[in-house]
Length: 173
Image (cartoon, rainbow, N blue to C red; front, side):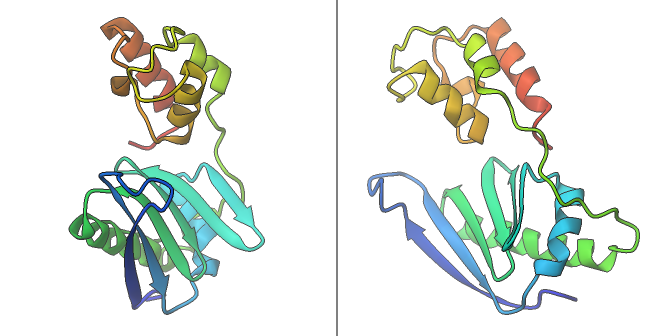
């Protein structure tokens, strides 16, 4: 087992103190850097950095970044959800490390969604109903995985399906 223990830190987003979500860091007691290319291969990270090593991916509706000594997770409901996700990640890291001889390591991220393609699928009214000041800002949040088609009230069912289909190519969910 590569990762045995960690310390969990839960906090509110300093930029948005009224946000209804929390963030977490799991400070790892062991260095998992060597497992990151294997984790990237198994979980399909969309960003991989080799120095210092880290992999970022979207899972369970969250953006998750795993560094050698730290895991960062955004948009959590509460501490219980943070504990569940970090526990799952610990299993994934250890499983990828255990099976590393069977896994082809991946040292690059997946292709990212194109902002302009997302924008083409939006109503482009800048109505602000989604909470973003413009459709372009909303499109960037969709590209990052922070928002989804269902977060744009003016989108009709056909457009929602098209946007979800486009984004499905960039997510394991």
